[in-house]
Image (tube, rainbow, N blue to C red; front, side):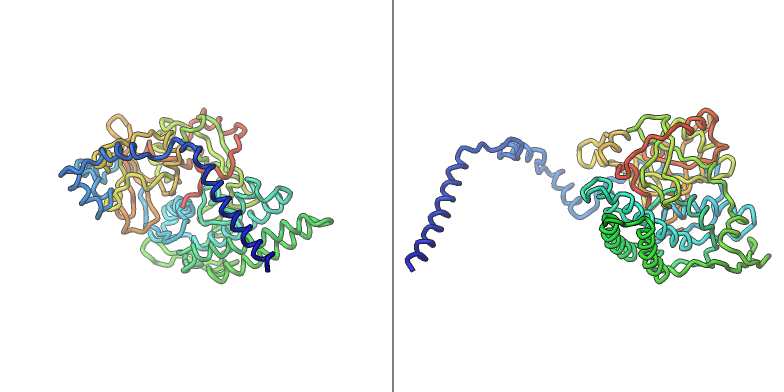
Length: 476
């Protein structure tokens, strides 16, 4: 018993002694600079004086969005829907609650050509569900094969970490459209229609990512085993992809290998009935030499007139990485104008949410006067916004119109969106040229609209950029 009481007393003494020692040791610690002091707080409070105008503004702002109150009334008259040069667009598509803007945009470019060439109905569409099925399957394979390729690297390696953070997703860019269509062809929308899960991708996307991460851990373990052969790893990967295929087929339907389709004219009358494979249908209605399409980009944080490539930024393991030529806006705009004048739409992407008047579908740097509302400035230029993560490409649309002044200079532009016909201006978004310069990032042009001197620059060896660079998040 004495030993027990002695132990308790000793523990209590140590605790008290430790507390005392700690208390004494903190007496000599100087408070670090950089914290908010009482004096600083008093100085900051002077910025809000509580005047009648301050209180009135506070009473309004606490119950309203700043965007609603900062809407620039003087700028309301700047909106008009006249365009000097316009590629006639057809029925507006709707990607619903999915990140497939890149796919809708790329296919809308091809759809417009097919409708005009074959006299198809205005609401004709290629099946986004068909291509999305293979997009997800190919991305799953890209991820699992990359896990095999990097199995010798530790889990905390930056590349491996990025792979596990991004096993699959529904976003993308134009290279994915080209590689997927070249490999799998196309089918009409009525042959493989949208499902709940193609229109609402988050749930199935989360499950696919969870399963792929689980499979990736197993592949890393197998690859590290002594005597493991590439053949056994490929066999295991194929087995894993079989599970992914089944999950996709259950939620999206299984892609057709062959189908019969009735071609209709603009009046909806049947003019032909034939059987196709996805590849033969593509060959007839949308055959495209994607090697003659080039992406140009305006990224002021990097050197102009250089070609860049983004590691892992592809949809198909055996396809091409995202590659682009970085150009000033003064070089990009004339090529876009030339394409529109020749009735050719373009894949286009931008930072769509910035200064967007959602009611009108109008984008202008003067739409919202936040500076006057809060009595401060928001003065970063495009380079500063990109380098501080304040801006980047977030959405792809189809560039289809430009309004030129008497000297041939652009005043405003218009894009066909994929958010349904009730959004914006009848399904379109209109942007001033000032907005275009500040928030446009990339466009895909056909070779014939690119001057020879710029086209020659695209043959240079690309500078490889890491997949985790924030500038290259997939468009949604």
